[in-house]
Amino acid sequence: RRRGPEDGVLPRAAAELFRRIARLEEDSGAALGPGRAAYEVRASFLEVHCENVFDLLAGPTSSSREPSTACTLREQEGRVYAEGAVEEKVVSVAQVMNVIQRGAAARATAATGVHAHSSRSHAILTLAVEHRWKPPSAGPGEYKSQTSRLTLVDLAGSETMERSHQGNVDSAGVGTNLGLLVLGRVIRALAEGEATQRAPFRDSSLTRLLQSS
Image 1 (cartoon, rainbow, N blue to C red):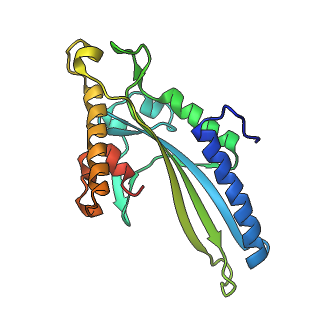
Image 2: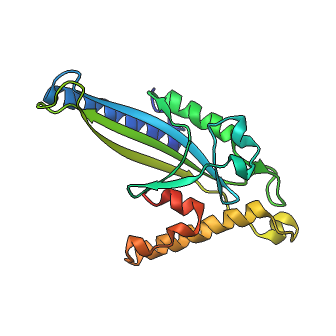
């Protein structure tokens, strides 16, 4: 896919990712031999709504926004992830954009006193890139693996209850503001040189998911 002058961050990031993978595959083939190294890209798309995490690629299951359909957050080897969230293999920019379009269509939106079509959730797109290779000494079926992740976040705007909801308390707006507040505190703590362990990642679902980023 050729890059267009009006492309946004997402298609540009995906195009650059696949361009670099193609170059790395060529270099790996030259260094290790044909078929001894490969890359795989998998996409996941989550939203944080009222402090619950939903899988935007799960279809009707998550569209109800019932807490019972939310993903449970788990931690493994220092990485927080949404248990059971779909990861789709993608091999092109077009496939990445298709994932984004399907996820965006399932995202929670509603009219507020400020916007007729307002995002009511934070959205997190993650592209996991797994590199597998067979060292020269590897036996049949043996390989090494390393996974990196590119995380792109679309934050919902902060809301005031007076302007957005005529003074009424709105749970989605409260959840949105909480994520933004804690994210600001985490960034400030890291910028001031505090140890990662002391930053308040666990104070919101958004920052928990972004902790390894």
